[in-house]
Amino acid sequence: MVELESDSELRQLPGAIAFGTFVGLVHGALAGVACCWFVGEMDYWLLASIMGAALGGGIGTLIGSKRGKIRNGEINPDIGTLTAISCGLFPATLALIGIGLAGGKMGIGVAFVGPMIGLCTGGVCDRAYEARIRRALESE
Image 1: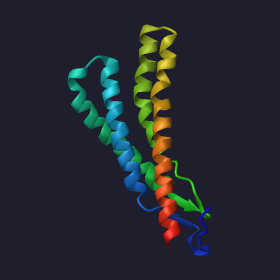
Image 2: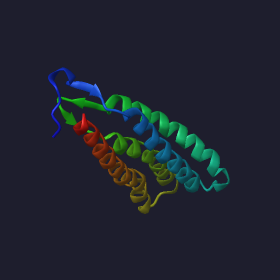
Image 3: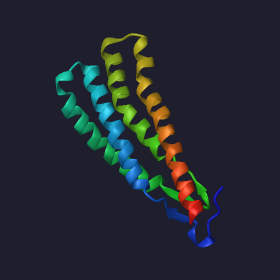
């Protein structure tokens, strides 16, 4: 664990907001395309990816500003995971609405695919970001 001085018990991680925004842009765009695919309107995939990226970027910025802090010398970089899971909830919501309209047992499992993909890819992004932060803090 990286030790910090006592006067910096709570400080913003470098680049946390930019990292959250980047992860939100990428995952939001993918979620937008997935939503287009669910409703069968692949003609509008570009518009859906732009709208998803805008929404995901906003979510990532918000999460990066709230969660991107060093608390009592401990780095807890879960910005990418929370952002990616949040973006994965958009296609999951459409899948759950489809279950209610069409019925079926398979749809409940499909609703968990988006958040699970977000959990895996967001976790990988977080580990890379944490390694960069630790390297930067150790070189100070």
